[in-house]
Amino acid sequence: MLFHYSKYFLFHIIGILALVAILAGGSYIIFGLFAILLAYILGDALGGDDIATPDFKKPEILTFQLWLALPLLSLVVFVSIWSVSTTDVMGFGEYLSGIIGYDLLAQRETSTIIHSVSTFIIVGLMIGMMGTITAHELTHRTWDPISMFIGRWLLAFSFDTIFSIEHVYGHHRYVSTINDPATAPRGRNVYFHILASTVKGNISAWHLEKERLAKFGKGSFSFSNGVIRGHLMSVVLVILAYFIGGLVGALFFTACALFGKALLEIVNYMEHYGMVRNPKVPVQPRHSWNTNKRISSWAMFNLTRHSHHHADGNVPYQDLRPYEGAPMMINGYLTTILVTLIPPLWHYLMVPKVLAWDEKYASKEELILAKQANLNSGVPAFIEAAKRTIYNS
Image (cartoon, rainbow, N blue to C red; front, side, top):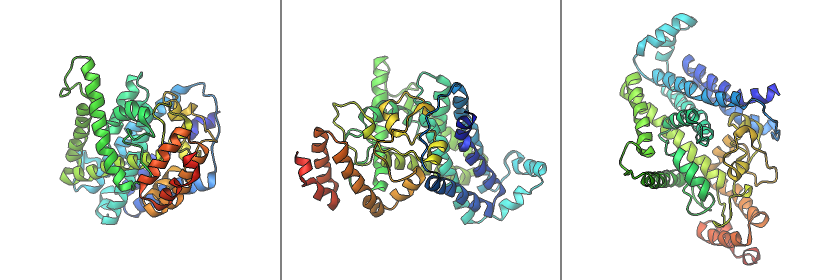
């Protein structure tokens, strides 16, 4: 049983690896980036599936482990901003160099643009994985003020505190329908989806907050508005980045935050791509793409078990079931993310999966929706499938 608790600390090991690589500087940053990528991609390719469903007697350990994401991510971001700046804020580099016997300041001076770009990728990944994924779990715990507080600050690192509103109260209600900003329709390009889902998600969150505040007789433009308050949290982080690393530090953090936000939308894209649902039918496991790949499951707190998560959003991550009969995505999360970035490859692999979903999982009403979605997709394989007998049955 100890193993089942400890496996979810893989996330912290990866965070510490990122931290050490950035601090060490130079080629260590590149080695750290490749180590992180290989850990996920090869780990999922070779590690098989995790379908274990242990009964955790002390879930508070796993909750505390989630809370640790905030100080760890804060430290990673702080060190990354320090690494691209020309100043030594609070004498951080000099002090730490004296303790560990390694000249961090001298190593920082040898950094090149390649090292800075590698740092950017690492930090963007950490904001997306350590920040957003952890916050996803925490902000579902609307009954726990500590988890909500930590979760929203984690989301502030990707300028996406509205996720705690739109995702919980919008996405989970409208998933796999045309009313859900996060659900990518058939044929959509991932790059367009990042922009479209971001804009529509913010609009949706604003309307949800407006409705909530109206119940208390409050106007939209007030500090009680979670959208306004959340974006101000992100502004605070940009200001702190400026104090740490000047204008370069603030711009670097902003770029990393936007990268982290883009990762979220890419994950949204692949979790429900092409799905259709009769709005009158409750969300079921078949309305999400699932995966049980071992490393993704451990390092991402069973976000991979997305089918169960959408069937019941209140279930803590450690209690989610693998649903082996659910529709399965291409591979583990990071591998699938990389595939989405090449649209022709994505459609080559996903069109057969989506059409197979129609045949195996769609209800009679959803087959009608699927036919229309195929005709609207602009993808020849989808359009051709729309003409088949199955869609007229």
